[in-house]
Image (tube, rainbow, N blue to C red):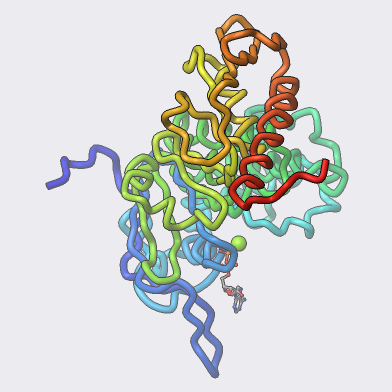
Length: 367
Ligand code: ADP
Ligand code: MG
C-alpha cells in the first residue's frame, strides 16, 4: 500500500478522453487518461509530436470540451465552473501569442488581472501593484513599455509567465514554454517555473520536448502514450522501470538510467589499450573522443575482441594533464591536448588495422 499523500490533490482526471468532435465524427486523441496533480507540484508533460499534449492542456483549461470522462479541479467538476470562476483557478499559456504583438508588456501582464476587475475592466492601485510585482518576479520590469512583437522569444515567454502569475491562480498550465529558446533560456525558464511552484505553492503542468531538463527538475513526469494512455511517476521511477527508454530511444542512441540521460551510440571497429587514472575527467574525455572516432579503449590486451589490436602500443593518462603514448614501454609521445593523442592513435592503429584486414584476406599491399 502507498503511504498517505500529504499534499492536496488539485486536479484529478478520471477516464478522460480528449479529442475533437464534429457533427459528423468524433476524433479521440488521448483515451482513458487517469492522473492527479498536487499542490506545489511541478510536472512536465512529455510525448512525441501529435501525442495530444496541447489537446490535453486545452481540455484541462476548459478551452476544449472532453469527449468522455471527468476533470475535477479543487473537488469541483470542470464542467460546473463558470468561466470567470475557472479563470481564478487555472491560468494557461498557449503557444500562439501572435495576437498580442501590438500590445505593450505592461498591458499583457495586466490582462492577467481581468478575472478580478469589474465590468469596465478598471484596474485598481492594488492591481497595478500586483502587475509590477509579477513583472519584477520574472525579470521583465525593464521591458514594460515595449511592444510584444519586438521582444525576443525568451522575453515574450517570460511576459506570458508574468501574466499567468498576475492571474493569481493555484494552477498554471503551459504549452511548450521553452520551445524556440536557446539553451540557457530554456534552463532559466524551467527553473523560474519550478521556483514559482515551490515558493508560491502552485501546481504547474507544462508540456516540453526538453526531456533531460524535465527529468532533472520535475517532481513528476506525465508521459502521453498513444496506446498506454497517461503514464505518470517521479522521473527516477520512470527511468528505473524503462518507460523513458521505451518511449524516447531510437536507433543510434541509448539511455543511461543512472544519469537519466541520453547518449549517441557509436560503432567501434578498432581498439586501443588505455590505462591510467580512470576516474579523472581527462581520462573520461579522452575515452569519449576515442569512442566518437570509432575506437574502443580497452584496459588490457587480453580484453581485445578485434583482430589487429596493437599489443605494444598503450595510451597512458597519468592524471597530471598529459597524455602519453608508450610503445613497448618506451614513451614515444607526451602531449596535453586530446586532439593530438587522438590523431596519433588514429594514424597508428588504422595502419595496423588495415594490415590485419589485409593479412586476414591474404591481400598484398600496393605501397
Ligand atoms: P501535441 O501537442 O502533442 O503535438 P496536439 O494535441 O496538438 O499534439 O494534437 C494531437 C492531434 O490532434 C493531432 O493529430 C492533431 O492533428 C489533432 N488536432 C489538433 N487540433 C485539432 C483540431 N482543432 N481539430 C481536429 N484535430 C486536431
Ligand atoms: Mg502541442
